[in-house]
Length: 152
Image (tube, rainbow, N blue to C red; front, top):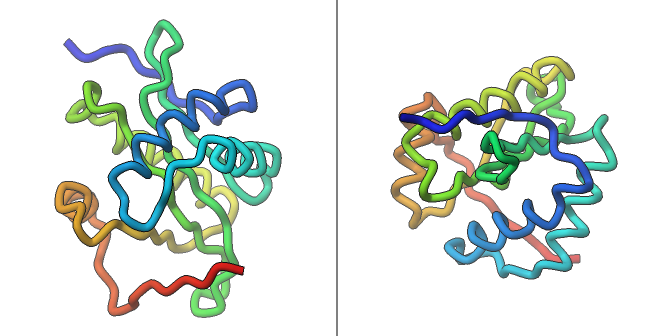
């Protein structure tokens, strides 16, 4: 029997639990390094600016944080509208395969649509085959773009 799960916007009081989930996520991604203080700071910035972004968080009936996803708005000149960057998608291992990730993503996409976004995009680690397959299953398409970054 599946656990009773609620999804809501993350609050500042959730930052420590959210940072723990990010630690698990960043531990398996080659491009990121777990750093609790940096992650807490980033989470607080996002939570405190709800006009720009949101963190959707999934909780068990007893209040345990078991999943999260974030979405942030950017202006797309190609779309002539807002676009949403989706990041930080993770569901605790023991709660996977229950539809929680799908509900989290849909909640974030609903938020983005309400804000006027007409497209969403995300990055996925090229070695994370389960995540690649998961997003493909949900209808996310690959693009011809290749990500680049530069630290400032």
